[in-house]
Length: 317
Image: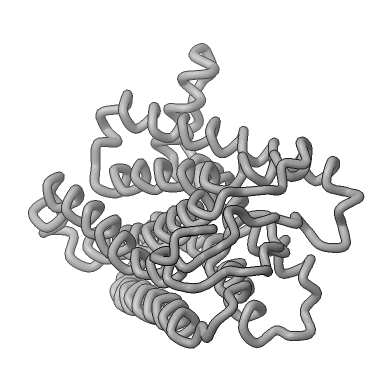
């Protein structure tokens, strides 16, 4: 019998995978493996490129490196277990390991959101008050902002596994998901979970409302500054420096919002669709972000071309 102090009596959970699509698990492992491999490749190239190219030792690229490290961690928190389910039928996960996975997935996701806010602030300072850019966004300040993002996420998510640990789990152990997600685990408890649900919703809403609000405010200020410029070329150049960041925001927040809303109000959405979108939220942005910045940022694009094709003439565009 389990220790009464821990309250839970089951020792592990059974992760179903994608309900209704179990026969296709073997094939689903292929895109997951490909996305995970591309995550490591793309983000490693970004980090190495920024490290080697001294002209990229600027706040914007330091934030990009933080985002790259965070993206690798985000994919690594879920992809290995997904592949275990799809290819090895490794459906069981220890109770405490499940809570650890839950904690890291949500912590890294909130850190990602904070980094996108920091990158929006970077663009705001660069375009709206360029003369003070180097004094406002110094290297120590960039490091502090990165640490603040991690600290906020760590403290906000910490109560989630602690509150779950207090709940009794007697008979329900089947999680209809490919990884341990907060609400999916909470729903299995044999007790009133209103506190857990309320805290989970409050964290998710506060992060989305605050971070999206700050990003929106930054871009409103940016657009106001850009349209005050007299030269069309200057306006185009200023907006061009924001293009990669805007793409990253859309790729990161769209599946996250869909997953959040369907889990709570989308009763008619098939579980398989919800789980696929929840998985894409963890696997697609880490692949897309380095591609977007590699294509949209000339300095990175030229440096990568120089690394792989040293004899190729670099374009001026």
